[in-house]
Amino acid sequence: MKQRIVLLGPPASGKGTQAEFIVSSFGIPHVSTGALLRAECANGTSLGKEANRWTHQGLLVPDELAIRMITAWIAEHGTRFLFDGFPRTEAQAEHLYTALASLSAPLDLVIVLELGEEEIRRRISSRLSCLACGATFSGTLNSLKAGDACLRCGEKLVRRTDDQPAAVEKRLESYHKLTFPVIGYYERNASNLIYRVDAGRESDAVFSDICKLIQS
Ligand code: ADP
Image (cartoon, rainbow, N blue to C red):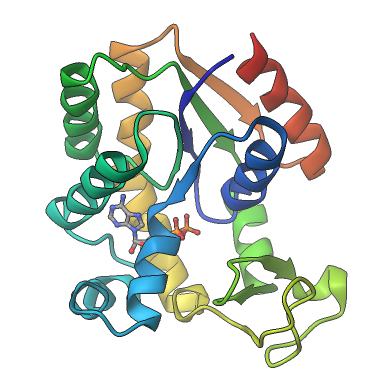
């Protein structure tokens, strides 16, 4: 079974949802750098305040900051992981390669969730998030609006500030410019580890493909 997995994909491609399925079926520890940053921000830490300068505009935080967070996470939790939202630039991918090589624990799977821009925009425009438990819901599919109670934990659902249209455009731009090349990086350096999955389908169908990859 695969134990060191990177989940790549554009905003709203379902990384968080699939990560939850993976955690509950395989028990692989999950870390979302975006969720870590939102928690830091909600707790008003200095790292959160620094990160908020970039995240609320839909820009990536500097590599150094993302690398600092992931290094601390590995030091605390070890080398079984599902990374969601990291690496997001080639420099972060290079750093991860070196850090894992020094621990003799190389990556064993890179999953790319693929989703077209029209569907990304459609999903984000109706997305509601719970900042307390990290769950996300489609406002249209679940007949929910901002301020309603989270279906999982009961806290208030909000529209993420970076889910507003201007920030979404910036995030898509960052994805194309900075994160898309990470796929190329793995294709060049680890072509035996990288698999593409069509994320435009029902989440159960997507997960069924992912299960096969993790178990192979
Ligand atoms: P999404 O994938 O839906 O855009 P995430 O929750 O993964 O959302 O990330 C939210 C924001 O957090 C990103 O837009 C970016 O500002 C910041 N972020 C998360 N991970 C990284 C990273 N590895 N490097 C730089 N910025 C990051």
